[in-house]
Length: 520
Image (cartoon, rainbow, N blue to C red):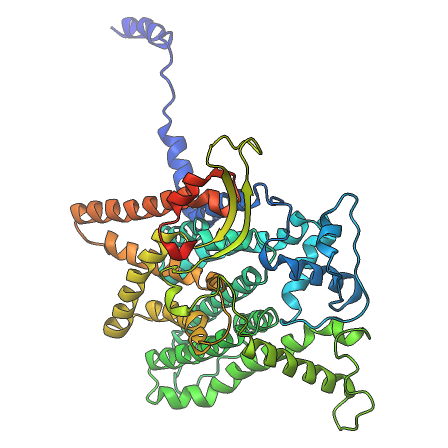
């Protein structure tokens, strides 16, 4: 029997080898994917957003809306250190073949601080005074905003899925898409505001971890140097250096961070958390946000101080005073800017009231060109058109209205700090505009609001799916409903995409997309 067993073994060995199982390889990869999903997911969504935004970025080869101001100011800053004067024929000369750049050395009055134009100038330095050049940096920051929002949502809600959902919604919002492809200041402002919000979230988590350490007394502990709050203060100062409405965000976020400190000390057992916060946290917070922000704002004017040809640069020369003449001239310039920005009431076809912004009642047409039959591929007998319409994806904004109501409920009745944080961002970027009922203002200013709307929707969708521990049936129904909302928003974005990219479409197709007369 032993010999038989031995002689039978070779026959078994000569049988065709079994196909190796893929399960070990998959099991080895899955933990790696799970371990790095917190970055892989956000990067994937950001790449999707980047491809959408950078595709054919140099089209149309034209000055779109207020691009007639900021790219030229950026070029002047790059070469002179201050905004110079351009002749009325400058647009045609810049876009002409061959190109000529008729920049004059005389200083020009400008309505906004210089940092946003310095950012635009980086792209111009790399690619020239060309539509692709002056849109490049705004597009890059718009794409990075998608990446940041995914990470912010992940940290805020403790869920990579919810964070990536918020970022996906941002990537398919029409307003953020258009403003990422246009050389205006608002997209730059939105990047700095969102980055500051993210830094404050990291600072909050680190402070909570410090207060949770054994033996820490919430009444007396000093929290020491807080680099992430310093970074937030720097970013908020940069936001103010792009547009002055960044100051409202600075004030709101400064209040938010000290309220978080108060709540953290209460959780750490402080008997008098307000008193402890005022004693140990309020002054450092003021220095980290307000003082650092003011210093950053002043530094953004370095080019104006270093040059001699800027507008009002020598206004105080020959006037006596204790303060250096350059600073007094600068202060006078700031007062002139304030007067202009608070008294601008010149009527504009596309101006609108903030009451209509959340429902996208009056979008802004930034570019419009009729196209005759037979030109540029137009075959429709009624003619064609090409337009860039700065309108948020309607279904996203309308869904956000319900999401904001849900967050108000969560914050007021459940004391949900996450809802309060998002609502703080909404309030800081939206509510201040209601005081300007007579000023000429536009709905595209709300591009800085869009990330917070996307966070609100993502939080609501997460609640629809359900918390851990719910039944499989409940989770399945919630997942289908949440997925259907996201797909509907993406489909709405694709439907309006021709109006975001100046695609040539028949007039009938354009009319079909004008759902309301106020959109025309």
